[in-house]
Image 1 (cartoon, protein in one colour):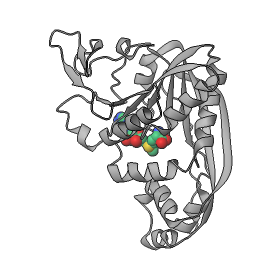
Image 2 (cartoon, helix red, strand yellow; image 1 turned 135 degrees about the vertical axis):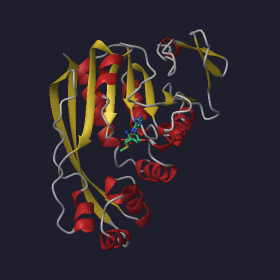
Image 3 (cartoon, protein in one colour; image 1 turned 120 degrees about the horizontal axis):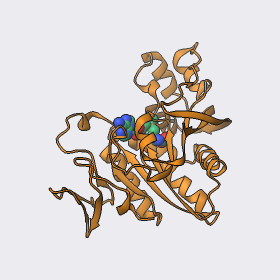
Length: 284
Ligand SMILES: C[S@@+](CC[C@H](N)C(=O)[O-])C[C@H]1O[C@@H](n2cnc3c(N)ncnc32)[C@H](O)[C@@H]1O
């Protein structure tokens, strides 16, 4: 499993080959993409203004790291990995992409899950935010991981057609046609999304009478659902910093009443429910 045979140039779509600390495309113009000191490669097409705006900012990513490093969402990575295991029954190795991977937390946990079972993976984390890709790559390096991280647009994925066995979409936008294109014929798309009562207790503090969030029930174009499961568990945050970190990485951070925010940020402890949904899709 070699990343060089999988990456393609975001500009001309020709294969990218590793040469020293760079990747060069085999197209006529030999576009070059350097590997950053953190270990990720920036495959966002140069000059596209949308690049600057897409993706979580550094503050959100830092909060995400503070919260996630507490292990509160480990059961979510575990369930995603188990879902892939059941859907693919891998025997020795497989290649997966994590589309919108944030700081790489789930991708790295998924790699660890399979490693513990003697199955090697090539995980490819794709993230619009360069800070996110950098954080993920640093974490991967520190943990001796074989996963590879790129700053990339998941709606224009720099991976070859049919090159991966599994695409994970963990709380991220689902790139229907690009997931379809990069998956092998037997590959699976696994979408993890929030359930109706996800973080319900936080929403109660923020809104008083929160509305139930509607479950994600859109089938991505070109796919058919083959299985579905839910996961629900409780966890307790016992510092104001952790409560603030989780809050900052949720969509409620951007749209909640000021009084609700103040109420939440004054709490010293909060027990919350995590409720998530996992749907496996196959190509039709
Ligand atoms: C809610 S976060 C989830 C991050 C990660 N999957 C997790 O569960 O920790 C959604 C992520 O999708 C990324 N994202 C959004 N649009 C994207 C795009 N067009 N291309 C790549 N990443 C994107 C964001 O930058 C953000 O990191």
